[in-house]
Length: 216
Image (cartoon, rainbow, N blue to C red; front, side, top):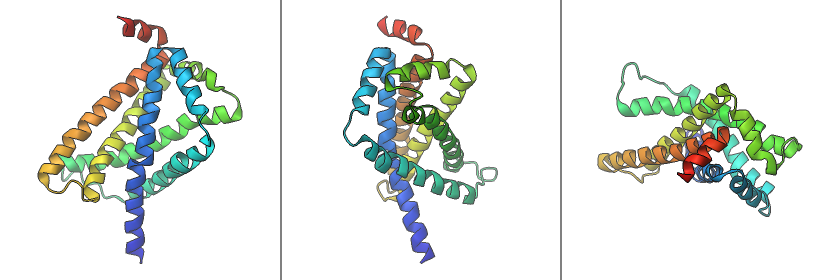
């Protein structure tokens, strides 16, 4: 019985990380990317999302609960895992170790980011129309910008590498050739999503400089 429960939890953990959480990550990065077009474009996009019907229900069911479950069970997996990178330093073993490390960092980053953005919106400290300015104030601090860069890259790596593991554990990529191709695909996904996320961060941090660069 215990083995079946663990198997179910691992499968659910894997599925939630790709379907609702992965989809949310991409949508969130795409929304933030509008910051590269200026404050007005970003605020318009945010206002559109904030105006969606049943938004609170959607966020709770498809974002917050999946992240909460994935994060808590992910911590259990991370601290139960036996990382033997010192003895077996081949590529996939390193990826196994990094998946656990980036998972912990990502969970800390998400908690902090949600506090600085969504919680402030709910409390009324920040308005949706002032979210760009709020992010600009946060990222004007070089230490916070560094923290956000690290958190962003860890989150994207965790998703991309988790996507590779998902393909293996769900029997989608069977065999060395399929898994090798999947490695290349997930690397490309990591690079593209990282570029999109970093451009958004620097657009928040230095909106004038980025806007001028986009016009050239």
